[in-house]
Length: 150
Picture: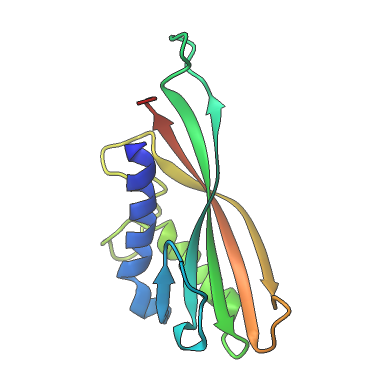
């Protein structure tokens, strides 16, 4: 599962490097407390379902296996912030190679690793969460990686 953890860390690193340019007050990858007004605008990283999409046919155990982890990047802003613009900027940062200017598309997350990458699954929102003054959008990604089994 090393590739899974390295892939998640790379997604967070890409956002962290551009946090100021995105205007984010907070980035949370494993939230334990609710978001407060002082944290806005923020991005919250959620790990979702992790499932095997292809078992190895060379082994009776089925490993190594190709797995897909659903990763949701949830953007939460005050209503006076253009959440769609922030969404487009965040999407660009996540799919850009780290430290390269001008931005270059790179869905591969780990250098010299051709089996760990991300792809866009879908977008949700914008939505108001039923709360006055807040808007949110979700960018849902698939993190594809190889699980060696041990």
